[in-house]
Image (cartoon, rainbow, N blue to C red; front, side):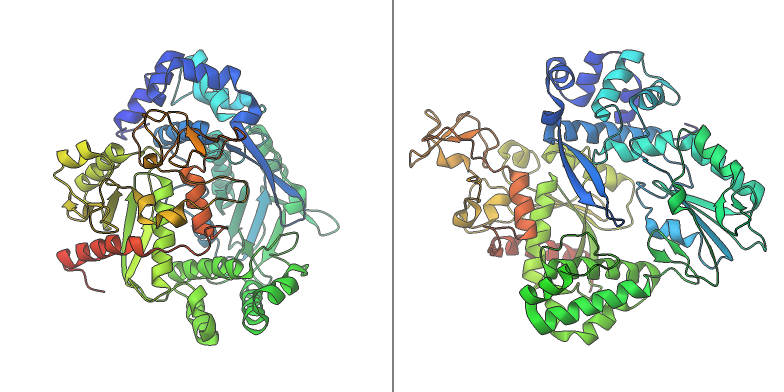
Length: 565
């Protein structure tokens, strides 16, 4: 671990001696941990679904349920700090992206790309267990077994768990070292993005340790490369092994690297055609045409809404513009002025980071700001939304902001707090709309009152109550604590009953059932936030005016420090 200074959170992880210690570190009890490990069925721990691959196959996603996911986030934060990825790893690393993977190989005579077959399934239970028992963790075997059980599903790393990316980079450290040795000996550059390997060089000839040429002229992995991969517990996908010269189109993780890093010309043309169809024929007819395409980027993909497809692709184009210095988005604005409302804004504005007490809060803030900006308000605000995995609730968020204030961060950070904890607000002398400066660029902001005279409230309270409590097609809805009698648990209309009516909370998080059939009908805060964020029915036309006072308070922070647009 060298001279790196670990947080108390990670130091205590390395000191865990038993399952009971692990439970305490995870913020739960040994009884709950044993129930999760040994009593809960796999189906109750994970939700399994499939998404289409580009080649037409199905990619299996195994996403942990909420409680396990929260535990995995906590484990993940320790893994990434104690055992950071190697320098050649570009995937699943904070601050690195496909661009970092691609940039290393731009303008090269030769570009070689390879793929590791069955990446996540090949990282099995035994390999993960061995990692937790080895340096730098060296945890007792019973603790390592518990951690492995929490991070694995059906004997392997599940694709979809928060811990899988960090553990995969941990397992790949041996592979990365071998790849670096090969690269140095062959005078080539190398990087790895998840299961994608890339080598590049300006040498006249291909490195014999990386590529072999058959008598037919076909390129195949050299024995040295195959041996390095196999000794590290992986296998190469021979169908995806490709060699490209500078006279051919060189693609690395979907980006062209022949000269500068850029999106492929085909991708740009495709987006323009989709926008033309949307402008000429509208959503329904345009979607019908696009859904019938059998073309790269859309093959085997179910497109549910053309507008969302355009938004997503244009947002990706804006990111590339910002990172590569191109102006593709500007050209779209010029070519399709009728569609500017669904395109990302061009304004540079005031950039800053928003943090909150939970991920659902960020979804609400993002949805609300996008909605009011489409009406021409607060166009100057250009936030980046990010929460640290260990931050849950007001106290954790406050401590996170304090730590950021102490390290003199380079960007403005605003932590948004609910006004639902009287003791917490009294401790910090806060009221709705209060701004507290914690550092030169770090601020705490309590939600502003959505309407005059509002008492305790949280972010869901910023919506009109009649809209927030709409019933979904499967009979679920959001419930507020003041709807129920604190003694009987019955709602005021006698239709629903709450399991724990004495629990004080603004938005109900425990069980609510319908009296006439006993069916559970509670819509969780996260599900509500996700449905609002994608405009799913019945939340497709929400009124976001309750957020305007909070956005005004954010704008006033920058007026206070003298930041100009």
